[in-house]
Length: 609
Image (cartoon, rainbow, N blue to C red; front, side, top):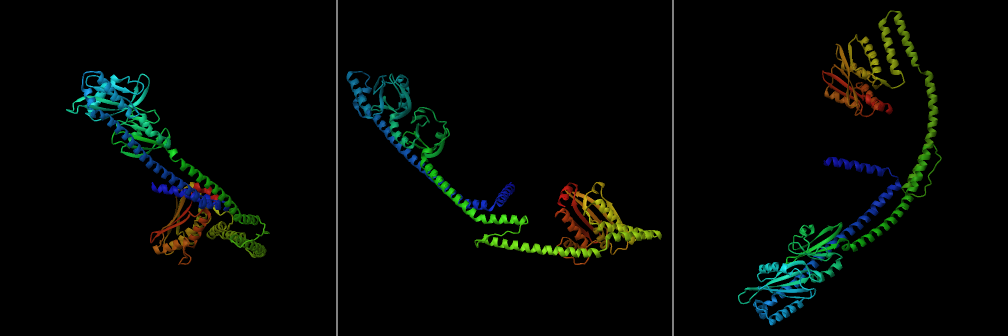
C-alpha cells in the first residue's frame, strides 16, 4: 500500500516538474519569485492570524469560566440569604408559639401577618411568603398579583419536601406561577419549622422568589459576551434562560449539558450552525450548573478584523511584488527572447544575423558566443561546399575505374554456360548459386526483407558449402508458414550459420546439423539457430558475448565478427530491445537466438525504419 502511494506521488511530482520545465524562462522566474517571496508572506500572515485567533479563544474560555464561577458564587450568596431568612422564625418565640397554638385570635393573626410582611420586605425579589401550621391554616403575604392559583395543589408537595429537609432549607427549582392577575417564573425555598423545646415540627415556611433575582446577576455579563446564559438544576431542568425560551424545560438529553461532567470547564459547541465557546460551573451549595454560551464570532471579532487587515496588506504587497517581478523577469528574459528569434532565423537558413551585445553578464557572453557560432557556421558551410565539389570530382573519377557489378554477374553466367557446354554440371551449379548469393548481398535496394527471402539465401549458401564439403552439413528449418512473412534484415541468418560452419564444426570430420526454429515471447519473435558442434567453454562464451555486445574487442581474431555485425544491424533496424542472445556448452553445441519484432510490431518497426 505504501509503495503504491509513493509511486503515485512520484508520478505526480514528475508530471509537475515536467510541466514546470516546459514553461518559458519568464514564467519560471515569476513562479520562483512568487514561491520565495509571496508564499512565505502568505504563510506568515496565516500563521499569525491562526495563533492570534487561537490565543483569543483560549483567553475567552479562561475568562468565561472564571466569570461563570463568580456569577454562580453571587447566586449562591443570594440563595444563602434566602436560607437564612427561612431560619429567622426559629429565633422568634412569639411566632413559634402562635404557629403551635391551634386557637385563632386577633392578636395572633395580626402578629403573624406583621412578621411575615417584614420577612417579605427583606429581599426585593421575594414575591410571596407562605406559612403553614399543622392545623391546616395558612398565613401568607404577597407583594403583587395575589396568591398562587395552585396553592392547594402544591401544599401537599411542599409539606413532603419540608419533611424531607427535617429542619434544613430545601431549594425547589423554577416553576411557572400564575395568580389572578399575572404569571411569572419563581423558585422556592422551603424549611420545616420546629419547637425549640422538643424539636417537634409545628409547620413549614415557603419563600417564592422571582427569577428576576437571577436575571440581574447575569444580564450585564450577557451584554458583554453578546451570548446567552442557562442555569439548570441537579436534574438538568432549566432554572433560568436569559433568552426566556427554555425556562422549566428538561435538557437532560442536550449534548452540551451532558458534556459538562466536571465542576467547571469550557468547550466548543455548535447550535443551529452557529459556533459558541461554552463555559460552565457547578454550585457546591445548590448543585445547580450555570452555562454561558459565548458566540465564537463575537469572541474572535477583533481577530477577524486583524486577519482581514493582514490579508489585505499582504495582498497589496503581493500585487506590488508581482508587478516588480514581471518587470524584472521581462528585463532579464528579453535578451534571451531576442537570441531565440535570431536562432530561429539561423534555422531557416539566414546566417546574416548578429546579436547586439550591450552587457558583460551571462546573457551578453551567450550572445557573443552566438555571434562566434554563426560566423563559424558560415565558414564551415563554405568549407563543405568546397569539399562537396572535390568529392564529386573524386567520385566521378572512381566511377570511371570501378568494375560494374553487372559485369561480374554476366561473367559468372558466361562461366556457367561454358561449364554446361562442357557437361560439367557441378561447376555450373556452383557458379549459378554463387551468382545468386552475390546478387542478393550486393543489391543496394531495400535492407528489410521477409524471413522467407533470408531462408532462400541461406539454402543457397548451405548448398554451396555442401558442394565444397561433400554434403557435410544438414540444415533443418522448422518455421511455420505464417512466420515466413515476418520482417527481418538482409543477411541476418547467413552470418550466424557461417559462424557455426567455420568454428563449431572446425575440428569435426563427420557431418554437422544446424537447426533453425522459431517461438514467440510476447511481442518478440525468437529465431533460434542451433548447431551440434564442439560448443564453447565459459571463458570463450564470455569473450564472444562481450565482443558481440560491444563491451571489449575479441581476443581471437576473426571469431564473432559476423555475430556482432548482425546484432548491431538488428538494433539499428528495430530498436534497443532486439538483438542476439548466445548460449553454449562444451561438447553440446551452440545456440544463437535472434530477437526481432513479432507480427504485432510490424507496423511500428516499419515506421522506425
